[in-house]
Length: 436
Image (cartoon, rainbow, N blue to C red; front, side, top):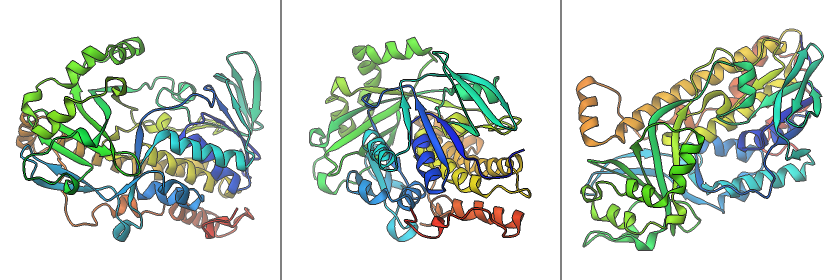
C-alpha cells in the first residue's frame, strides 16, 4: 500500500491531459516520464473551446497569458432561429461572472505551448513508442511493456491515452466507447464569404452562433485571433462505422460534402452561403462517442490510473471535454504528494474519482440539454411532449458551479480533513499563481 508520495510516474499519452499532468506533477516535486506513439512532427487540425474552469488551471500553471493572445476571446454562444432572431444564449465565459472570457484556440497552438513548457521544465518525453500492456503491479510499483518488447517501470502509471485507451483495457476490459448515432461534419472557411440578409450588418452579427431550424443546429465559431476564419458545422444521424469506414467517409469529399449540404434549402441564406463556399480540403468529421460510466478509474492495486477521455469521453457540445481532462490532471497531481498513512493511495484515489465523477455527471447532464436543443425541429417537438430537458438560459450566473469551482481547493480540503492538517508535502506552490 502506497502511503507516501510517488517518486516516479509514467504517463502514457502526450495529449492535452497527459502534458498538463506532467507539468502539474513537476510543480508538485514529482518526477515523471511521458511515453507517446506519435512523433512531435505530427500536427493536429481543428480548434477547441476553453472555458474559465480550464483557463484557471492554465493560468495557475503560468500558461494562460501566452495562449490568450493566440486565440479568439469571447463570452457567449448565441442561439438564433431560422429568421436569425436571437432566442437564447449560452455563456462559455465572462470576465465579470467567471473571471475569464472563453478562448477558442487551435489545438496545435495549445499543444505547442504545453510542449514548450515541458521542454523548459526538462520533463522527459519518449516519442515513437507504442504502449502494449501491463506486465505486473505490486506494492513496489508497476512494470509495463511496449510493442517492441522493451519494458519500463514506475511507482505509478497513468493512462492519458484517449477515448480508445489501451490502459483502459487493463483497468476495465469490458468497457468500450459507445457511439451516439450522430456525426458532426465541419469545415473551416473565411468569414468574408458569408452572405447576410439585407439590412443586417455583418460586423454586428454575433459569433459564435448556433442557428436552429428544421435541420437541427448549424454552428459557426471564429477560431483565429481576429475571427476571420470560422468553423462551420452541423451534426447528422449516421450509422456507426469501424475505423476504416470513418476514414473512407472522410476521404470521400464529394459524398461528405453532399451529406453536409443535404436539405440545404431548409437553412437560411447565411447558412446556405457557408455550405456553398466549403473548402473541401478542410472538411472533417467527428463521430460522437461516449465512454460508459465505470466503477473504477484505477486498478485493484491502485498503481495504474486513467483520466481524461480514457475515463470519461464527453461529446463536445458544452465545450468541456478537454476542460474536464485538465481538471482530472490538476487534481490528481495535487493529491499524490499528500499521501500519508491516514490517506493511502487506494483511499485517496477512491475519493478523487468520486469527486471527479460528480463533476462529470453534471457536465453530461448539461451536454444532454444542449444536444437536445440542437436536434431537428420535429425531434425537438417530440422531446417537448415528453418533458425531456432542453437548454434554456436562466440568470446570468447559472454556470457558476462549472466555471467558478475551485477543484484544487475542494481536493485539498478533503486531504486536510482526512489528515487533520498533517501534510507531508513541502511544496507550497499551490498558494500562489507561480510557485515554480
